[in-house]
Each structure stands twice: as C-alpha cells, then as structure tokens.
Amino acid sequence: AQSVTQLDSHVSVSEGTPVLLRCNYSSSYSPSLFWYVQHPNKGLQLLLKYTSAATLVKGINGFEAEFKKSETSFHLTKPSAHMSDAAEYFCVVSLPGRRALTFGSGTRLQVQP
Amino acid sequence: NAGVTQTPKFQVLKTGQSMTLQCAQDMNHEYMSWYRQDPGMGLRLIHYSVGAGITDQGEVPNGYNVSRSTTEDFPLRLLSAAPSQTSVYFCASSYATGMNTEAFFGQGTRLTVV
Image (cartoon, rainbow over all chains, first blue to last red):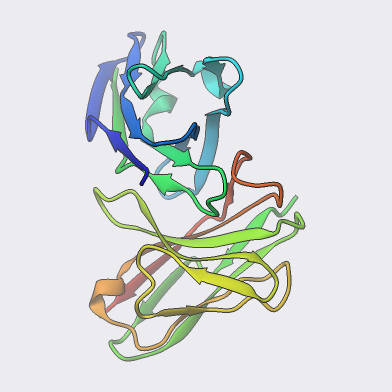
C-alpha cells in the first residue's frame, strides 16, 4: 500500500522568510513524487516532480524539494516567501503500474506581510 | 491550448436529481480520472480510465458512473444526487506512458446538493 502524509495542515510565514512544507510517504517501491499548488478557486498546477533522477528537484517559482529515501520524506522548501505563494499545496505519490495518484491532505500556506 | 476543460464550473442540484459533469482534453492523453476535493481530505479518486472503453473504480466510486467512448471525453454521472456529494470535482489527464508524468487538471466543478 502507498500513502502520503502532509505533516502540517496550516503553515504561516512572513514575507521574505523561508518556507518548509513537510511530506512523508510510505511505499514498498520507488515512488514518483510530486508537489502541486492550488491557488484559491483555481485548478491544480504542478510545482515539481521526482522520478528517481536527482534527489534535489527544482521547480517553478523558486520552490525545490529533496527526496530522502532513508527518511521517506519529500519536503518542499523555498528560501524567501512571496505574498503570491499563499495557496494550498499537495504532496502526491504515484507507483509504477498504478493508474492514478494518491494525494496528501494538503497544507495551506499563509504569507503575512 | 485548451488542456483539460470541465463544464459546468458551478452547479446546484436538489437531492435525487441526476446530472453529468463533462470533461474533455485535447492532448491525446490515454489516462483520465475524476477526483473529488473535500476540506482536509486532499483529492480522492472516484473513477479512472486507461483508454477508450476501459474504466475502473477508484477510492470513492459509490453514487457515480463513468464511461469513456472516446479518448477526448470522460464524463462523470451522478445517478441520484445526495448532500454528501457536495464537493469540488476535478478531472485530470496524463500521458499514456504511465504515472511518472505530470497530470493536467481542469479548473474544477463546484457542486452543491441541497
């Protein structure tokens, strides 16, 4: 079985400070991992994905994530938050041979001025 | 580029009514799926399809039907709407080569059942 856990339902940061959104997964196989972002009343947009190449993955808008197999983690980071980063973020896992994605419960990021 | 198009964007139904949520993609993707999004629960898979004529159930299929007569279209039918089906529904598609590739999402349909 595979699952994905987002450790924080809400994260609040000040503009210009670092962002850390935490994600742990459980899988018997090497998964593909994704981070998606959803801005209010919008669809989901891919931020970045890990597919067993480099363990540090760079995405759009300055986000990056590091795959750590020993910790079964795939945390999302950004050095400096912008107001426009306020959104909900989903960690997503996929297994080879599976035909659909498994979503974490989401982390809502607030950015304070 | 249209991508994945969902209609309608908003819908209010009375309990017991039926309706179809439409989803179309123009990227020639084999895989299509329907999710529902509820607060604090992420997105949960309702049904999915790996190609025309092939569908399968996801995590929460009860009360929903799907069909896939063409590669482009993947409609979701609510047979007899219930208040528990009040949710935001997303359709997604991805390449035939498997799930290591990005899924593209529609803008969502916000459904309220009263």
